[in-house]
Length: 476
Image (cartoon, rainbow, N blue to C red; front, top):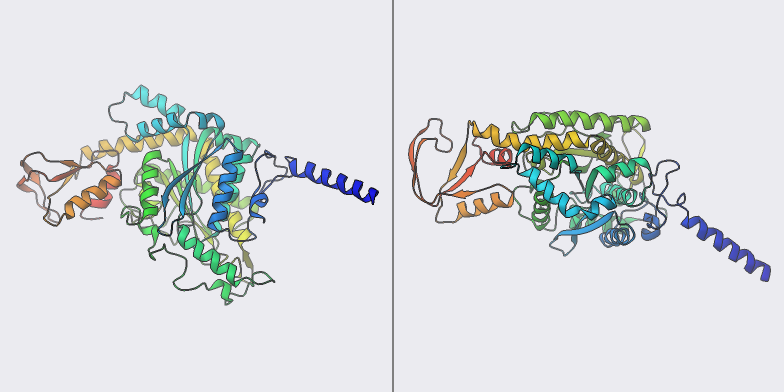
């Protein structure tokens, strides 16, 4: 008995040493021989399973994020909204300890780049030189497209604990804003449906199995069954209002929206197919190709299939990347073939698992963050030029400003408030004003008219001018 107790004690000590070892800490997609801070809890240590083995419910997402923030000085958490069902919409802010210590200055610099008016060129150059690139990663806006949330958890751990050179470069050169589940209410419907349909034998791959069907009305939409990926300028839901307010506070330079598509597909990333909204600036198209090259190289290393310029356009300004594009961010949709309930047989006979799907999303997001870090200076300069040119280009027309008369129903007031919430400047006429070359909305010929006092004026020669024009111009 004494000998067994001694052996047991030795075994426990060995196990403890193994758990505390930097080599032992990992996540499902860790690169070979990766080193991690042993003080930062792994996903398994908090969740009880490896990333990709199960879908993670909202309370465990929050628990893990809070554990990371408590253990790592690279992590801060912010709550940007609460859903109608009371769940937090989380934003995790990840960057180096040095950047965390000057985070308010970074935000102030980012706002200076958002509005370059009145600043001497030398000042703007200095601000751009010291500002980290800000990368926004939004996952699972459609609740059943849930591999994104699992990839986000792996990304959180890697940035919080990784000790390799690539992780440190991202932390030093960028601020990564992670929204791990953009639609908490819809995502929770999916997670609970799958939990109830699991069996002791795991997840059946048969496409017709109950676990892949869900219950009515399905998890795609929000509490009120609204598609939050159509809401970015409408702002009809608290999740979107909080998200857009945070976006306007930070001014991200890159924005990725990670989705899922049909299980028998592969992986999509930008560039998109036509039509492309005419207000998308040429610099955005340049960066689509840059990020596509890095994503393609990352997928090629694994031998994974992908496609681009098919299936997904860039026209409607209310999508989760289309709205950011019109503010100057490089907005990109990433679409992963769905694992549905977590494991499903596809039309070619292969089986797509949740782990596979999350790994693909993790790889694309990592390649995006790493490319941004490596080209930080160029990306920040191009963003600044986008904001400058939004002012200069619209000073020359063809539409300089849009005037909206007030109406007795308050619709003009509501529209003005909505535009302001989108970060668009709106002015008021203090007195009646003669305009010689005004064109009535929808008409073709200008004429002289009197604009009434109190009318709202949206001057397109402003940093958010491209967004304002896309929303308000008569012909898109």
